[in-house]
Image (cartoon, rainbow over all chains, first blue to last red):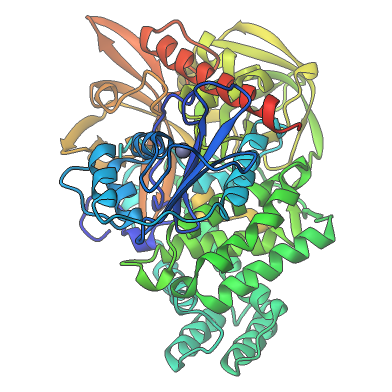
Amino acid sequence: MSDGRGPDWERSSTARVLPPARPRKLAKVPFVELADGRLQGVVSSGSDIGRVYVSSVEAGSHTFACSTNNNRPCGGARGMFCNHILAMVNEAVLQYGGERVARYLKVEPDEPTGQAIARDMMSTRPSQGDSAAAATVFSQFLRHLAYLELPPTTAPLPEMQWFPPTRAVV
Amino acid sequence: MRADLLDEAIPGLDEAMAAVDAGDQALVAGLLRPQPAQVAALTELADAVAATPLAGRVAEAVEKVAAGAASEDHFVAIAAARTALLGSVHDALTARVEEATGRSGDAGIASAAREARSPNVLAAARSWLSDLARAGWRGIDHDLVSGAGQVISAMLPDPALRRLAALLDGFAAELAASCPGAALDRVPARRWGDLWSRAMMLTLSAGAVPAGTATGRVLPLGVDLHEHATAAQAQVHAVFEPSDGGPPRLVRASVSVPKPDTVLGAGIWQLLRPHLSLLAAVGDGRSMDLDGMPVTEEGDLVWDDEHARPGAAADAFATARVALATATAPVPAPLDRHPARIAVPVFLEGYTVDKDGDALTFTVAGHRLPVDTDRVPSAGPLTPEAVAASGACIGLLRWDDGTFTVQPLAVETTIKKKAVAVHAGAWAGGTTDKNGVKAEKAATDAVTVLRERAGRLLRK
Ligand SMILES: [Zn+2]
């Protein structure tokens, strides 16, 4: 006990390392993640139910890309963040909290909102990247969806004792 | 409960934990090119198991690490030394809990676990874990951490490998979010040391299997929830009364499932609910009758609805007041002993509650017992406020970093001048509570969207 208020974080078996994600509506942006040094995600097309856009913004450089799952470039992303990228940033803030998203992308906005984070990134006139990452992002999304198909088990998983829930809100 | 005993020092415990800490510090910097201080730290770990059958192998492992020539077997030996030390700490703590609760443990020792199968994927996991040990927590980067992805994907579909898969999945996600390790302000050294050595052990041993069957009545006490971004488990703690008139025993029934990280709160109950009818029984205040339900020697019912049917009404607080004290506690399998696994059902009443900011403390017979309300799932009616206003509590006694705490599973409190029981897991089987219904609807919508997307995109 370091401060009498709970275990020492570095000496706690159940130290909370990752804050839990927050629930959000998934219809518009079914998938978003902070991974591989990018904010990346999948955004539903407003017009075609079978089409999705694969969007990403690199941490630090804020190089961005947006294309469809069939690798066609997004018409909206010409030199500027398209609406898909803006929607992705907003949903990432809902899911992970604005501070975590800003820290990951290496921006220091006035306020931790999606709008402020996007505005901060665009103010440095980031360049548009190629869609090389799109295949990786899309396969991450499919892997994510596949979790719904995995069978449950009633055999005990003792190691889940190390993963308690937390009521802390990010 | 003799809460005073929970405050008293346990002989040898600090020394054992100091040796564990030493090993954990060695892992922070990595074992590829160890500095003299790290070798000294590992030597401390080796000395702590010098009087055990592991002595020779661990001493050799430390020598090889010092020479920069450690291989997988040596890392396994180090994980085993750490596991043995924490096992002894677990045993000392459990003995103390038995004194405090006046409950005796089962006489038997849970038999050896079965050997792990699927050698290839387990070897791949061991190889990744060895690379982690070489790099150390300060040396992790995205390339190293993402190496676990294929191993985890290969294991997840097989329920027999789920223990290791769910552990690695949660562990790798934490590591990925902490890259690069060189930039970390602080390192959760105990936690990652635990997860690393648990995983290493599980590549060699798959854990206990059902050794018998249970026929009789199961009286639920409450639900404990566990979750990381991509997996969740609910565990019902209960008293089992065998129909042959044998002594009542404490048992658990578990259900777990991998999940997308956007399925949360009530959505987790929805995924788990269909596979464990006992969850609904907790909310309804019912017992269940078992006939030939598989059970491990560790007291885990391996639930199958074929062997269960709804029983008579059974109030958890009546069970806690009458049956809990007489029930014997199961013994974990040797490799599974660890302080973090201590979760002993207890019944407390006649305490006073102190509130200091968010921290709650029960004072039981003059002794302070911190209350871990953070573990109470948010998708349920039990709140820290209800705990603070309670007069009786069913909880799980736990231990972390030198301190016993109680995690509330249910409390008796007064709402609008009426005495009511509030359960942490009340929504597990479904709910008519206004907030609960709203949360259920939102969760259903989320899963519907994901299933629709999966239907269109996955099978192309
Ligand atoms: Zn776009």
